[in-house]
Amino acid sequence: MRKISPMLSVIIVLMLCTSLISCGKKEKEISKGHTEEERIAQEIASHWLELVDSENYGEAWDKAAGYLKSAVTKEEFQSSLSGVRKPLGKLISRIVKSKKYCKSLPGAPDGEYVVMEYETSFEKKKSAIETVSPMKDKDGKWRVSGYYIK
Image 1 (cartoon, rainbow, N blue to C red):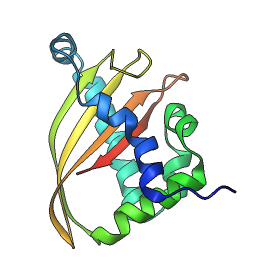
Image 2 (cartoon, rainbow, N blue to C red; image 1 turned 90 degrees about the horizontal axis):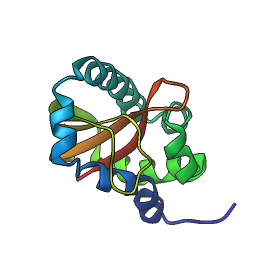
Image 3 (cartoon, rainbow, N blue to C red; image 1 turned 180 degrees about the horizontal axis):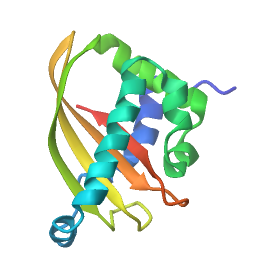
Image 4 (cartoon, rainbow, N blue to C red; image 1 turned 45 degrees about the horizontal axis):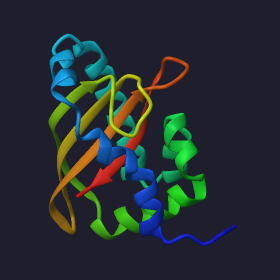
């Protein structure tokens, strides 16, 4: 198994998130008619975040979208998340700040995405923004395709 730094694999996994944040005006207009997709995506994101919060990083990778899995191996994902999340400590609170439905994103295949931002507080980082990006996978099920903390 090749050795990869946690930061590099985080960058690999989260390249999608960087492009997801930039949903254009057209996609924002589309969002108004997609409340059911946003609701489902938020539910999926919440369950996925519970896995991450409980340090079940391997299971989080297993339940992720094919797009994320094609970008990083399970081992790299586990190592990256452990390196990023463990130092923050336990979750204190998480509140949905925004969610946007998008069909087209820079640097990502066309599809259905919901870009969600959470205002989050951890034991050792009082104020953080988490971005979770569920997408409708090839089988029609919503799964997380990207995760980023700043």
